Amino acid sequence: MEPTKFEISDYLDDPQVIASYLNTVLEEGTSDELIVALGHITKAIGMTKIAEKTGMSRPSLYKALSEGAKPQFETIHKVLKAIGGQIQVKVSEE
Image (tube, rainbow, N blue to C red; front, side):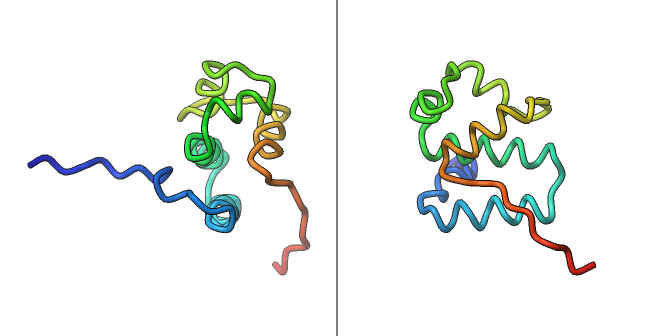
């Protein structure tokens, strides 16, 4: 019996879980990890659905959110809006 590959997108099935995951990556991760996390979230919601909402093609979306990609901020912003997220700034306590 072969072990199954862990897919985090299988567990991103609730808006609160998605928000928590994304906020954790934003607080603790790198910009590369943020891109990959957005890819996981997009896959969980549905690549076709997010492609339609962003006005991007599915192949372009896959490419922009793959490991090692360097998408433009506009692309990240479109994806965040399409998944129901938003960018907010809060004062750091450091």
